[in-house]
Image (cartoon, rainbow over all chains, first blue to last red; front, side, top):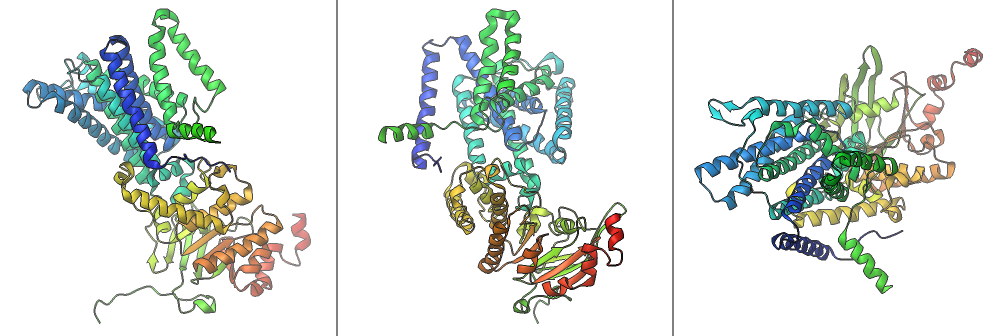
Length: 335
Length: 284
């Protein structure tokens, strides 16, 4: 029997991972500030971060909970619009400093998306498989169409519908994106590696058996779906502060599919896979800008090739662990 | 008399002599279910003593697994009452019945095959470790305490079947017999007062079956729980069951000790057909 556990005590592996993250964060900020990484690439990196959060959040519902929601862009839209409207409002009345406005706006976006996700999840999660896919697809479209059509409510200019919501304060930067990616990863990771996560995985593997082990399947499905919507809302809020202009057409069905493709390509149930795949799929089209006509072909080919040679996705359900690798290296040196 | 309270008591039925002073762990009254016009189970009355090993046998399609699904509320009964200890389980769902103290295994193995053996057992412990989501996310002391306790207890349970060496293996990669044993361990982890085993010896060779019989008795003695099993292996049923009920076409046709069942003409008829018509049965 091989001992899979890392040799480090738990607190040390937390410390190693924490230090590694801080190192990455400071290194990234330094590189951007000194101009080592151009402004253009910095923006691509931020976009990668947003897509990582989206992929991680969908992975919670798809890879871990085993459901197939196709309306993820809808939750992103809810988060984006609610935080954008809040930030615009705060900016206009100047009632709080920008440093406070951003976290509250992000949180608001997440909570609002989670709330709607909860309301949708209760009826939708009674269905399974393709039926759930279709009903969530429907809800996602409802959100988009509603946003497109309620341009003003009772005389208040609200979402501006198809004319786009403009002048959103551009608050998203490398620092807060990185921080939120880390928080998302940490929360989903600790959730999955707990009794609640085991219950979630059990529901994915065999719902009837999970239920006869005393797991309240409705509760965990709704909780997982709500958490997934929460982080999608946060990604949406980041996106609003990144792009500065919101139009409902950005959150259509294709966006949902794009997120799903990212998750499937990375491997359902692998958070490391989602991160790699989101990074690759976001940066490849940007890197291929030079070959403008061919870049979508390369993008599609990449998907086809990965699916043929690695149907479980890039990482399968393997998780990357820094402390595991370090302890393996250390073990080899010692023995 | 302060606070007069009426509690349900067993009406009739037989339990082993040693359990006679204890409340029966399971009692069903007029239990039945219809699927459309088909009466799948009808008038199912059964009493199981606190530490009884009971058997439920019958020909294929008699409704044995349906009875298990009714007891665990995978199907909601059309009529009748199920008393689990002193609790009436009507209106409960599967997970609540499990919390109330009934655990089961499945005829076609239902393990969480992508998870490790230890994790499978830990899922069984789900309700005995009761930390909340925030303490899991912030890794509060209650999380570490709960996880450590559950892990130790799970390994202890696995050691009953000498499975602690395979704790880190994927459940789906285990050999067939070990998967069946793991299902029993997982059911035990939910801390039940009655364990329902659906064909635990299916696909096992005689040596494994003999070992399983020993283990079933051992589980009963160690945990002091009742066991109800469906089985086609008559050697196992007649060897360890104290009370047996025979089911045919959804109805109980005989109840009693193994010896009584063996010699019951109705049972012989259900399994082999009527004596005079034996030739015709074969031709038909």
